[in-house]
Length: 289
Length: 299
Image (cartoon, chains in turn yellow, orange):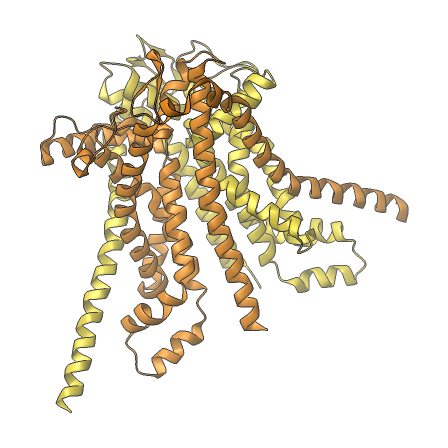
Protein backbone atom coordinates (compact mmCIF):
# COMPACT_ATOMS: atom_id res chain seq x y z
CA UNK A 1 0.00 0.00 0.00
CA UNK A 2 2.76 2.36 0.98
CA UNK A 3 4.68 1.60 -2.22
CA UNK A 4 1.70 2.53 -4.41
CA UNK A 5 1.23 5.77 -2.61
CA UNK A 6 4.85 6.79 -3.16
CA UNK A 7 4.63 5.99 -6.87
CA UNK A 8 1.50 8.07 -7.32
CA UNK A 9 3.01 10.84 -5.22
CA UNK A 10 6.08 10.74 -7.39
CA UNK A 11 3.92 10.90 -10.50
CA UNK A 12 2.10 13.87 -9.10
CA UNK A 13 5.37 15.61 -8.35
CA UNK A 14 6.68 14.95 -11.86
CA UNK A 15 3.44 16.23 -13.34
CA UNK A 16 3.65 19.35 -11.19
CA UNK A 17 7.18 20.06 -12.32
CA UNK A 18 6.31 19.32 -15.94
CA UNK A 19 3.23 21.54 -15.97
CA UNK A 20 5.07 24.41 -14.29
CA UNK A 21 7.85 24.08 -16.86
CA UNK A 22 5.39 24.28 -19.74
CA UNK A 23 3.54 27.24 -18.22
CA UNK A 24 6.84 28.99 -17.63
CA UNK A 25 7.85 28.46 -21.27
CA UNK A 26 4.54 29.91 -22.45
CA UNK A 27 5.09 32.91 -20.17
CA UNK A 28 8.65 33.43 -21.42
CA UNK A 29 7.25 33.37 -24.95
CA UNK A 30 4.48 35.91 -24.50
CA UNK A 31 6.01 38.36 -22.01
CA UNK A 32 8.56 39.75 -24.51
CA UNK A 33 5.75 40.26 -27.02
CA UNK A 34 3.71 42.32 -24.58
CA UNK A 35 6.81 44.16 -23.38
CA UNK A 36 7.89 45.09 -26.90
CA UNK A 37 4.49 46.44 -27.89
CA UNK A 38 4.02 48.37 -24.65
CA UNK A 39 7.58 49.71 -24.70
CA UNK A 40 7.30 51.03 -28.24
CA UNK A 41 4.01 52.79 -27.50
CA UNK A 42 5.38 54.15 -24.23
CA UNK A 43 8.55 55.53 -25.84
CA UNK A 44 7.03 56.63 -29.12
CA UNK A 45 3.62 58.09 -28.37
CA UNK A 46 5.03 61.48 -27.21
CA UNK A 47 6.40 61.93 -30.74
CA UNK A 48 3.00 61.47 -32.33
CA UNK A 49 1.38 64.73 -33.36
CA UNK A 50 -0.57 65.99 -36.33
CA UNK A 51 2.61 67.55 -37.73
CA UNK A 52 4.44 64.21 -37.42
CA UNK A 53 1.71 62.33 -39.28
CA UNK A 54 1.07 64.93 -41.95
CA UNK A 55 4.51 66.43 -42.52
CA UNK A 56 7.45 65.61 -44.74
CA UNK A 57 10.83 64.67 -43.23
CA UNK A 58 13.12 67.68 -42.83
CA UNK A 59 16.78 68.31 -42.04
CA UNK A 60 17.99 64.97 -43.40
CA UNK A 61 15.06 63.20 -41.73
CA UNK A 62 16.15 64.36 -38.28
CA UNK A 63 12.99 66.44 -37.99
CA UNK A 64 9.55 66.70 -39.51
CA UNK A 65 7.08 63.90 -40.19
CA UNK A 66 6.55 60.61 -41.93
CA UNK A 67 3.67 61.36 -44.31
CA UNK A 68 5.36 60.05 -47.49
CA UNK A 69 6.17 56.77 -45.76
CA UNK A 70 2.58 56.35 -44.53
CA UNK A 71 1.17 57.11 -47.98
CA UNK A 72 3.69 54.77 -49.61
CA UNK A 73 2.86 51.87 -47.32
CA UNK A 74 -0.84 52.49 -47.89
CA UNK A 75 -0.47 52.31 -51.69
CA UNK A 76 1.80 49.27 -51.51
CA UNK A 77 -0.67 47.42 -49.28
CA UNK A 78 -3.55 48.36 -51.55
CA UNK A 79 -1.60 47.31 -54.66
CA UNK A 80 -0.74 44.00 -53.02
CA UNK A 81 -4.41 43.45 -52.17
CA UNK A 82 -5.62 44.24 -55.70
CA UNK A 83 -3.29 41.61 -57.14
CA UNK A 84 -3.15 38.94 -54.45
CA UNK A 85 -6.76 38.82 -53.24
CA UNK A 86 -8.53 37.75 -56.48
CA UNK A 87 -5.70 35.43 -57.43
CA UNK A 88 -5.48 33.89 -53.97
CA UNK A 89 -9.22 33.38 -53.55
CA UNK A 90 -9.42 31.96 -57.08
CA UNK A 91 -6.68 29.46 -56.30
CA UNK A 92 -8.36 28.56 -53.00
CA UNK A 93 -11.69 27.97 -54.76
CA UNK A 94 -9.93 25.77 -57.28
CA UNK A 95 -8.24 23.70 -54.58
CA UNK A 96 -11.29 23.27 -52.38
CA UNK A 97 -14.10 23.02 -54.97
CA UNK A 98 -12.70 21.87 -58.28
CA UNK A 99 -9.30 20.23 -58.02
CA UNK A 100 -9.32 16.47 -58.53
CA UNK A 101 -6.97 14.50 -56.31
CA UNK A 102 -4.28 14.11 -58.94
CA UNK A 103 -0.55 14.51 -59.22
CA UNK A 104 -0.91 18.08 -60.55
CA UNK A 105 -3.02 19.14 -57.60
CA UNK A 106 -0.28 17.82 -55.36
CA UNK A 107 2.25 19.83 -57.33
CA UNK A 108 0.15 22.95 -56.71
CA UNK A 109 0.10 22.21 -52.98
CA UNK A 110 3.83 21.66 -52.88
CA UNK A 111 4.32 24.91 -54.82
CA UNK A 112 2.24 26.77 -52.21
CA UNK A 113 4.25 25.30 -49.34
CA UNK A 114 7.48 26.30 -51.09
CA UNK A 115 6.24 29.78 -51.90
CA UNK A 116 5.47 30.25 -48.21
CA UNK A 117 9.00 29.26 -47.23
CA UNK A 118 11.07 31.32 -49.66
CA UNK A 119 13.09 33.94 -47.73
CA UNK A 120 11.74 37.46 -48.11
CA UNK A 121 15.03 38.80 -49.46
CA UNK A 122 14.91 36.19 -52.24
CA UNK A 123 11.52 37.62 -53.22
CA UNK A 124 13.31 40.95 -53.39
CA UNK A 125 15.91 39.52 -55.78
CA UNK A 126 13.17 37.93 -57.89
CA UNK A 127 11.22 41.18 -58.05
CA UNK A 128 14.37 43.02 -59.08
CA UNK A 129 15.19 40.46 -61.77
CA UNK A 130 11.69 40.06 -63.25
CA UNK A 131 9.67 43.21 -62.61
CA UNK A 132 12.25 45.97 -62.24
CA UNK A 133 14.77 44.91 -64.87
CA UNK A 134 13.28 42.35 -67.27
CA UNK A 135 9.80 43.87 -67.57
CA UNK A 136 11.29 47.35 -67.10
CA UNK A 137 8.79 48.56 -64.53
CA UNK A 138 11.70 50.28 -62.78
CA UNK A 139 11.75 50.70 -59.01
CA UNK A 140 8.04 51.39 -58.76
CA UNK A 141 4.92 50.78 -56.74
CA UNK A 142 3.88 48.34 -59.46
CA UNK A 143 7.05 46.23 -59.12
CA UNK A 144 6.89 46.37 -55.32
CA UNK A 145 3.21 45.43 -55.15
CA UNK A 146 3.66 42.51 -57.55
CA UNK A 147 6.59 41.20 -55.48
CA UNK A 148 4.69 41.57 -52.21
CA UNK A 149 1.57 40.02 -53.77
CA UNK A 150 3.34 36.82 -54.79
CA UNK A 151 4.86 36.62 -51.32
CA UNK A 152 1.42 37.05 -49.72
CA UNK A 153 -0.37 34.52 -51.95
CA UNK A 154 0.35 31.36 -49.92
CA UNK A 155 -1.08 32.91 -46.72
CA UNK A 156 -4.27 33.96 -48.50
CA UNK A 157 -4.66 30.66 -50.37
CA UNK A 158 -4.23 28.42 -47.35
CA UNK A 159 -6.53 30.35 -45.03
CA UNK A 160 -9.17 30.85 -47.75
CA UNK A 161 -9.08 27.17 -48.65
CA UNK A 162 -9.49 26.22 -45.02
CA UNK A 163 -12.49 28.56 -44.74
CA UNK A 164 -14.09 27.11 -47.89
CA UNK A 165 -13.53 23.52 -46.74
CA UNK A 166 -15.15 24.30 -43.40
CA UNK A 167 -18.49 24.94 -45.14
CA UNK A 168 -20.46 21.68 -44.70
CA UNK A 169 -21.00 19.64 -47.83
CA UNK A 170 -24.77 19.53 -47.25
CA UNK A 171 -24.90 23.23 -48.26
CA UNK A 172 -23.51 22.32 -51.68
CA UNK A 173 -25.73 19.26 -52.05
CA UNK A 174 -28.87 21.28 -51.34
CA UNK A 175 -27.92 24.01 -53.79
CA UNK A 176 -27.16 21.55 -56.58
CA UNK A 177 -30.35 19.62 -55.91
CA UNK A 178 -32.29 22.87 -56.36
CA UNK A 179 -30.80 23.16 -59.84
CA UNK A 180 -27.86 25.46 -59.11
CA UNK A 181 -24.83 25.08 -61.31
CA UNK A 182 -21.41 24.50 -59.78
CA UNK A 183 -20.41 28.16 -60.04
CA UNK A 184 -23.81 29.35 -58.79
CA UNK A 185 -23.38 27.07 -55.79
CA UNK A 186 -19.96 28.49 -55.05
CA UNK A 187 -20.95 32.09 -55.68
CA UNK A 188 -24.28 32.13 -53.80
CA UNK A 189 -23.86 29.45 -51.15
CA UNK A 190 -20.28 28.51 -50.34
CA UNK A 191 -18.50 31.88 -50.68
CA UNK A 192 -20.93 33.88 -48.50
CA UNK A 193 -20.53 31.30 -45.73
CA UNK A 194 -16.74 31.38 -46.00
CA UNK A 195 -16.32 35.16 -46.27
CA UNK A 196 -15.33 35.84 -42.62
CA UNK A 197 -12.63 33.15 -42.73
CA UNK A 198 -11.35 34.38 -46.07
CA UNK A 199 -11.30 37.98 -44.86
CA UNK A 200 -9.29 37.00 -41.79
CA UNK A 201 -6.69 35.33 -43.98
CA UNK A 202 -6.56 38.25 -46.40
CA UNK A 203 -6.01 40.77 -43.61
CA UNK A 204 -3.32 38.66 -41.92
CA UNK A 205 -1.57 38.25 -45.27
CA UNK A 206 -1.70 41.98 -46.01
CA UNK A 207 -0.46 42.70 -42.49
CA UNK A 208 2.70 40.79 -43.28
CA UNK A 209 3.07 42.53 -46.63
CA UNK A 210 2.70 45.95 -45.01
CA UNK A 211 5.46 45.22 -42.52
CA UNK A 212 7.96 43.63 -44.89
CA UNK A 213 11.16 45.41 -45.80
CA UNK A 214 13.40 42.98 -47.65
CA UNK A 215 11.11 42.45 -50.68
CA UNK A 216 10.76 46.19 -51.26
CA UNK A 217 14.43 47.09 -50.75
CA UNK A 218 15.34 46.78 -54.43
CA UNK A 219 11.90 46.95 -56.02
CA UNK A 220 10.26 50.16 -54.82
CA UNK A 221 11.63 51.70 -51.64
CA UNK A 222 13.17 55.16 -51.81
CA UNK A 223 15.55 56.52 -49.17
CA UNK A 224 13.97 59.96 -49.30
CA UNK A 225 11.51 61.59 -51.67
CA UNK A 226 10.32 65.15 -51.23
CA UNK A 227 6.94 64.41 -52.83
CA UNK A 228 4.19 61.83 -52.78
CA UNK A 229 4.01 59.17 -55.51
CA UNK A 230 1.71 60.19 -58.34
CA UNK A 231 1.46 56.96 -60.34
CA UNK A 232 2.12 53.25 -60.02
CA UNK A 233 5.40 53.74 -61.88
CA UNK A 234 6.83 55.96 -59.15
CA UNK A 235 9.15 54.81 -56.40
CA UNK A 236 7.97 55.62 -52.91
CA UNK A 237 9.04 55.75 -49.31
CA UNK A 238 7.52 53.09 -47.05
CA UNK A 239 7.17 52.82 -43.28
CA UNK A 240 9.23 49.66 -42.64
CA UNK A 241 12.03 50.79 -44.91
CA UNK A 242 11.94 54.27 -43.39
CA UNK A 243 12.31 52.77 -39.92
CA UNK A 244 15.27 50.75 -41.19
CA UNK A 245 16.86 53.85 -42.73
CA UNK A 246 16.50 56.08 -39.70
CA UNK A 247 17.70 53.40 -37.29
CA UNK A 248 20.80 52.35 -39.21
CA UNK A 249 21.71 54.75 -42.01
CA UNK A 250 21.28 58.22 -40.54
CA UNK A 251 23.76 59.17 -37.83
CA UNK A 252 22.57 61.41 -35.01
CA UNK A 253 18.93 60.51 -35.42
CA UNK A 254 16.73 61.74 -32.54
CA UNK A 255 15.48 58.65 -30.71
CA UNK A 256 12.03 60.14 -30.40
CA UNK A 257 11.48 60.25 -34.15
CA UNK A 258 12.67 56.65 -34.41
CA UNK A 259 10.21 55.46 -31.77
CA UNK A 260 7.49 57.65 -33.27
CA UNK A 261 7.96 55.98 -36.65
CA UNK A 262 7.90 52.58 -34.95
CA UNK A 263 4.61 53.52 -33.27
CA UNK A 264 3.03 54.45 -36.61
CA UNK A 265 4.16 51.17 -38.20
CA UNK A 266 3.06 49.16 -35.18
CA UNK A 267 -0.35 50.84 -35.16
CA UNK A 268 -0.77 50.08 -38.85
CA UNK A 269 0.08 46.41 -38.35
CA UNK A 270 -1.66 45.87 -35.02
CA UNK A 271 -4.93 47.41 -36.13
CA UNK A 272 -5.04 44.96 -39.06
CA UNK A 273 -4.32 42.16 -36.63
CA UNK A 274 -7.07 43.24 -34.26
CA UNK A 275 -9.61 43.63 -37.07
CA UNK A 276 -8.81 40.09 -38.25
CA UNK A 277 -9.18 38.69 -34.73
CA UNK A 278 -12.54 40.45 -34.26
CA UNK A 279 -13.92 39.23 -37.58
CA UNK A 280 -12.90 35.69 -36.76
CA UNK A 281 -14.33 35.57 -33.26
CA UNK A 282 -17.60 37.21 -34.32
CA UNK A 283 -18.02 34.79 -37.19
CA UNK A 284 -17.33 31.89 -34.85
CA UNK A 285 -19.97 33.09 -32.40
CA UNK A 286 -22.57 33.54 -35.14
CA UNK A 287 -21.96 30.35 -37.04
CA UNK A 288 -25.00 28.10 -37.12
CA UNK A 289 -23.34 24.91 -38.31
CA UNK B 1 -30.66 33.68 -70.01
CA UNK B 2 -30.59 30.57 -72.09
CA UNK B 3 -28.96 27.35 -70.99
CA UNK B 4 -26.19 27.84 -73.50
CA UNK B 5 -25.19 31.26 -72.16
CA UNK B 6 -24.93 29.90 -68.64
CA UNK B 7 -22.74 27.11 -69.88
CA UNK B 8 -20.37 29.52 -71.59
CA UNK B 9 -20.07 31.64 -68.47
CA UNK B 10 -19.67 28.61 -66.32
CA UNK B 11 -16.91 27.32 -68.56
CA UNK B 12 -15.06 30.64 -68.65
CA UNK B 13 -15.20 30.99 -64.88
CA UNK B 14 -14.05 27.42 -64.35
CA UNK B 15 -11.08 28.05 -66.64
CA UNK B 16 -10.23 31.27 -64.82
CA UNK B 17 -10.32 29.59 -61.43
CA UNK B 18 -8.19 26.74 -62.68
CA UNK B 19 -5.68 29.27 -64.03
CA UNK B 20 -5.50 30.89 -60.57
CA UNK B 21 -4.71 27.51 -59.06
CA UNK B 22 -1.98 26.70 -61.53
CA UNK B 23 -0.48 30.21 -61.36
CA UNK B 24 1.22 29.21 -58.12
CA UNK B 25 3.36 26.65 -59.94
CA UNK B 26 4.25 29.29 -62.53
CA UNK B 27 5.37 31.71 -59.81
CA UNK B 28 7.71 29.19 -58.20
CA UNK B 29 9.08 28.42 -61.65
CA UNK B 30 9.54 32.10 -62.48
CA UNK B 31 11.35 32.74 -59.21
CA UNK B 32 13.80 29.92 -59.84
CA UNK B 33 14.21 30.92 -63.49
CA UNK B 34 15.06 34.54 -62.75
CA UNK B 35 17.39 33.65 -59.90
CA UNK B 36 19.21 31.29 -62.27
CA UNK B 37 19.27 33.86 -65.04
CA UNK B 38 20.92 36.50 -62.89
CA UNK B 39 22.93 34.23 -60.62
CA UNK B 40 24.41 31.48 -62.76
CA UNK B 41 26.94 33.74 -64.55
CA UNK B 42 28.70 34.01 -61.19
CA UNK B 43 29.63 30.33 -61.42
CA UNK B 44 31.58 31.11 -64.58
CA UNK B 45 33.03 34.44 -63.49
CA UNK B 46 34.26 33.32 -60.09
CA UNK B 47 36.58 30.30 -59.98
CA UNK B 48 35.07 27.61 -57.75
CA UNK B 49 38.03 27.44 -55.32
CA UNK B 50 37.83 31.16 -54.58
CA UNK B 51 34.06 30.86 -54.19
CA UNK B 52 34.69 28.48 -51.30
CA UNK B 53 37.48 30.51 -49.76
CA UNK B 54 37.17 32.27 -46.46
CA UNK B 55 37.21 35.88 -47.51
CA UNK B 56 34.21 37.93 -48.63
CA UNK B 57 35.41 41.32 -49.78
CA UNK B 58 33.71 42.06 -53.12
CA UNK B 59 35.35 45.46 -53.66
CA UNK B 60 38.67 43.67 -54.13
CA UNK B 61 37.09 40.71 -55.91
CA UNK B 62 37.12 38.30 -52.99
CA UNK B 63 33.93 36.27 -53.24
CA UNK B 64 34.45 33.56 -50.63
CA UNK B 65 31.03 32.60 -49.31
CA UNK B 66 32.22 30.45 -46.40
CA UNK B 67 32.08 33.31 -43.86
CA UNK B 68 28.49 34.03 -44.88
CA UNK B 69 27.49 30.37 -44.65
CA UNK B 70 29.15 30.05 -41.24
CA UNK B 71 27.36 33.20 -40.11
CA UNK B 72 24.01 31.79 -41.17
CA UNK B 73 24.75 28.45 -39.48
CA UNK B 74 25.80 29.99 -36.15
CA UNK B 75 22.87 32.39 -35.98
CA UNK B 76 20.40 29.67 -37.03
CA UNK B 77 21.67 27.17 -34.44
CA UNK B 78 21.43 29.84 -31.78
CA UNK B 79 17.91 30.71 -32.89
CA UNK B 80 16.91 27.04 -32.81
CA UNK B 81 18.23 26.70 -29.26
CA UNK B 82 15.93 29.56 -28.25
CA UNK B 83 12.85 28.80 -30.33
CA UNK B 84 12.56 25.02 -30.30
CA UNK B 85 12.19 24.45 -26.54
CA UNK B 86 10.06 27.57 -26.06
CA UNK B 87 7.94 27.00 -29.17
CA UNK B 88 7.26 23.30 -28.60
CA UNK B 89 6.53 23.83 -24.88
CA UNK B 90 4.16 26.68 -25.65
CA UNK B 91 2.41 24.54 -28.26
CA UNK B 92 2.00 21.68 -25.75
CA UNK B 93 0.78 24.14 -23.14
CA UNK B 94 -1.82 25.61 -25.50
CA UNK B 95 -2.97 22.29 -26.95
CA UNK B 96 -2.99 20.12 -23.84
CA UNK B 97 -3.17 21.91 -20.52
CA UNK B 98 -4.13 25.58 -20.89
CA UNK B 99 -7.63 26.48 -19.64
CA UNK B 100 -9.91 28.07 -22.23
CA UNK B 101 -9.26 31.68 -21.14
CA UNK B 102 -5.49 31.21 -21.36
CA UNK B 103 -5.79 29.87 -24.89
CA UNK B 104 -7.87 32.90 -25.85
CA UNK B 105 -5.04 35.16 -24.67
CA UNK B 106 -2.05 33.12 -25.85
CA UNK B 107 -3.12 32.40 -29.41
CA UNK B 108 -3.78 36.02 -30.48
CA UNK B 109 -0.54 37.10 -28.79
CA UNK B 110 1.48 34.55 -30.74
CA UNK B 111 -0.29 35.81 -33.85
CA UNK B 112 0.75 39.36 -32.98
CA UNK B 113 4.34 38.17 -32.77
CA UNK B 114 3.99 36.56 -36.21
CA UNK B 115 2.81 39.90 -37.58
CA UNK B 116 5.45 42.13 -35.98
CA UNK B 117 7.59 43.53 -38.79
CA UNK B 118 11.11 42.12 -38.68
CA UNK B 119 12.50 45.63 -39.07
CA UNK B 120 10.83 46.53 -35.79
CA UNK B 121 12.51 43.69 -33.93
CA UNK B 122 15.78 44.80 -35.47
CA UNK B 123 15.11 48.35 -34.32
CA UNK B 124 14.43 47.23 -30.73
CA UNK B 125 17.45 44.96 -31.02
CA UNK B 126 19.73 47.87 -31.77
CA UNK B 127 18.29 50.22 -29.15
CA UNK B 128 17.46 47.84 -26.30
CA UNK B 129 18.82 44.31 -26.64
CA UNK B 130 22.30 45.07 -28.00
CA UNK B 131 23.27 47.46 -25.15
CA UNK B 132 21.96 44.84 -22.70
CA UNK B 133 24.04 42.10 -24.31
CA UNK B 134 27.11 44.34 -24.33
CA UNK B 135 26.97 45.15 -20.64
CA UNK B 136 25.84 41.73 -19.36
CA UNK B 137 28.46 39.60 -21.07
CA UNK B 138 31.02 42.37 -21.33
CA UNK B 139 31.89 42.35 -25.03
CA UNK B 140 33.05 45.33 -27.12
CA UNK B 141 29.84 45.49 -29.13
CA UNK B 142 26.34 44.19 -28.51
CA UNK B 143 25.76 43.62 -32.22
CA UNK B 144 26.71 39.94 -32.25
CA UNK B 145 25.56 36.57 -33.54
CA UNK B 146 24.13 35.96 -30.07
CA UNK B 147 21.91 39.06 -30.28
CA UNK B 148 20.71 37.98 -33.69
CA UNK B 149 20.04 34.45 -32.48
CA UNK B 150 17.95 35.71 -29.56
CA UNK B 151 15.71 37.83 -31.77
CA UNK B 152 15.52 35.27 -34.55
CA UNK B 153 14.58 32.64 -32.00
CA UNK B 154 11.70 34.82 -30.94
CA UNK B 155 10.63 35.29 -34.55
CA UNK B 156 10.64 31.57 -35.33
CA UNK B 157 8.38 30.78 -32.35
CA UNK B 158 4.99 31.56 -34.01
CA UNK B 159 5.70 29.15 -36.88
CA UNK B 160 6.69 26.38 -34.47
CA UNK B 161 3.76 27.00 -32.13
CA UNK B 162 1.05 27.02 -34.80
CA UNK B 163 2.28 23.96 -36.72
CA UNK B 164 3.06 21.92 -33.60
CA UNK B 165 -0.24 22.85 -32.00
CA UNK B 166 -2.11 21.64 -35.09
CA UNK B 167 -0.19 18.37 -34.94
CA UNK B 168 -1.02 17.86 -31.26
CA UNK B 169 -4.68 18.71 -31.87
CA UNK B 170 -4.83 16.11 -34.62
CA UNK B 171 -3.99 13.26 -32.23
CA UNK B 172 -7.25 11.31 -31.83
CA UNK B 173 -9.03 11.76 -28.52
CA UNK B 174 -9.31 7.98 -28.15
CA UNK B 175 -5.53 7.68 -27.65
CA UNK B 176 -5.73 9.91 -24.59
CA UNK B 177 -8.85 8.20 -23.28
CA UNK B 178 -7.24 4.78 -23.57
CA UNK B 179 -4.17 5.97 -21.67
CA UNK B 180 -6.36 7.58 -19.03
CA UNK B 181 -8.31 4.33 -18.64
CA UNK B 182 -5.04 2.52 -18.00
CA UNK B 183 -4.34 4.89 -15.11
CA UNK B 184 -1.83 7.26 -16.70
CA UNK B 185 -1.47 10.76 -15.27
CA UNK B 186 -2.05 13.75 -17.54
CA UNK B 187 1.68 14.32 -17.73
CA UNK B 188 2.35 10.71 -18.68
CA UNK B 189 -0.30 11.00 -21.40
CA UNK B 190 1.38 14.09 -22.86
CA UNK B 191 4.88 12.66 -22.61
CA UNK B 192 4.28 9.02 -23.59
CA UNK B 193 1.18 9.16 -25.81
CA UNK B 194 0.29 12.53 -27.37
CA UNK B 195 3.80 13.78 -28.10
CA UNK B 196 5.03 10.52 -29.67
CA UNK B 197 1.83 10.31 -31.74
CA UNK B 198 2.33 13.87 -32.98
CA UNK B 199 6.06 13.33 -33.46
CA UNK B 200 6.27 13.90 -37.20
CA UNK B 201 4.09 17.02 -37.04
CA UNK B 202 6.20 18.49 -34.25
CA UNK B 203 9.37 17.74 -36.23
CA UNK B 204 7.82 19.49 -39.24
CA UNK B 205 7.10 22.48 -37.02
CA UNK B 206 10.71 22.60 -35.86
CA UNK B 207 11.95 22.35 -39.42
CA UNK B 208 9.70 25.10 -40.70
CA UNK B 209 10.74 27.29 -37.77
CA UNK B 210 14.41 26.76 -38.56
CA UNK B 211 13.68 27.44 -42.22
CA UNK B 212 12.11 30.72 -41.16
CA UNK B 213 15.23 31.58 -39.17
CA UNK B 214 17.57 30.85 -42.08
CA UNK B 215 15.56 33.14 -44.35
CA UNK B 216 15.09 36.05 -41.96
CA UNK B 217 16.78 39.14 -43.27
CA UNK B 218 16.14 42.54 -41.75
CA UNK B 219 16.52 41.64 -38.09
CA UNK B 220 19.82 39.82 -38.58
CA UNK B 221 21.13 42.51 -40.85
CA UNK B 222 20.43 45.15 -38.20
CA UNK B 223 21.65 43.38 -35.07
CA UNK B 224 24.47 41.01 -35.99
CA UNK B 225 27.04 43.67 -36.71
CA UNK B 226 27.62 42.82 -40.37
CA UNK B 227 31.17 41.51 -40.24
CA UNK B 228 31.78 38.81 -42.85
CA UNK B 229 34.42 36.84 -40.93
CA UNK B 230 34.81 33.09 -40.83
CA UNK B 231 33.63 31.75 -37.49
CA UNK B 232 35.74 29.21 -35.71
CA UNK B 233 34.46 28.20 -32.32
CA UNK B 234 31.83 28.82 -29.73
CA UNK B 235 33.31 32.16 -28.70
CA UNK B 236 32.47 33.53 -32.12
CA UNK B 237 28.85 33.54 -31.00
CA UNK B 238 29.68 36.79 -29.22
CA UNK B 239 31.33 38.44 -32.19
CA UNK B 240 29.78 40.31 -35.09
CA UNK B 241 28.86 38.08 -38.02
CA UNK B 242 27.04 38.39 -41.27
CA UNK B 243 24.52 35.96 -42.72
CA UNK B 244 23.76 35.12 -46.35
CA UNK B 245 20.45 36.98 -46.30
CA UNK B 246 21.94 40.09 -44.70
CA UNK B 247 24.70 40.17 -47.31
CA UNK B 248 22.19 40.30 -50.15
CA UNK B 249 20.09 42.97 -48.45
CA UNK B 250 23.07 45.11 -47.48
CA UNK B 251 24.98 44.99 -50.75
CA UNK B 252 22.43 44.70 -53.55
CA UNK B 253 21.57 48.37 -53.33
CA UNK B 254 25.12 49.41 -54.13
CA UNK B 255 26.15 47.11 -56.98
CA UNK B 256 26.06 47.76 -60.70
CA UNK B 257 23.56 45.57 -62.54
CA UNK B 258 25.33 42.78 -64.36
CA UNK B 259 28.61 43.03 -62.45
CA UNK B 260 30.31 40.01 -60.90
CA UNK B 261 29.27 41.23 -57.47
CA UNK B 262 25.64 41.47 -58.65
CA UNK B 263 25.72 37.93 -60.02
CA UNK B 264 27.34 36.63 -56.85
CA UNK B 265 24.52 38.06 -54.71
CA UNK B 266 21.98 36.28 -56.91
CA UNK B 267 24.05 33.11 -56.51
CA UNK B 268 23.60 33.41 -52.74
CA UNK B 269 19.90 33.87 -53.48
CA UNK B 270 19.88 30.60 -55.43
CA UNK B 271 21.50 28.85 -52.47
CA UNK B 272 18.87 30.26 -50.10
CA UNK B 273 16.09 29.27 -52.52
CA UNK B 274 17.39 25.70 -52.69
CA UNK B 275 17.76 25.47 -48.91
CA UNK B 276 14.17 26.58 -48.41
CA UNK B 277 13.08 24.19 -51.17
CA UNK B 278 14.71 21.24 -49.37
CA UNK B 279 13.30 22.23 -45.98
CA UNK B 280 9.78 22.72 -47.30
CA UNK B 281 9.73 19.66 -49.59
CA UNK B 282 10.73 17.51 -46.63
CA UNK B 283 8.05 19.12 -44.49
CA UNK B 284 5.48 18.65 -47.26
CA UNK B 285 6.33 14.97 -47.70
CA UNK B 286 5.83 14.42 -43.96
CA UNK B 287 2.42 16.10 -44.18
CA UNK B 288 1.37 14.01 -47.19
CA UNK B 289 2.60 10.78 -45.62
CA UNK B 290 0.67 11.56 -42.45
CA UNK B 291 -2.50 12.15 -44.42
CA UNK B 292 -2.07 8.81 -46.18
CA UNK B 293 -1.52 7.02 -42.89
CA UNK B 294 -4.61 8.64 -41.39
CA UNK B 295 -6.64 7.49 -44.38
CA UNK B 296 -5.35 3.95 -43.94
CA UNK B 297 -6.24 3.87 -40.26
CA UNK B 298 -9.70 5.33 -40.81
CA UNK B 299 -10.65 3.06 -43.70
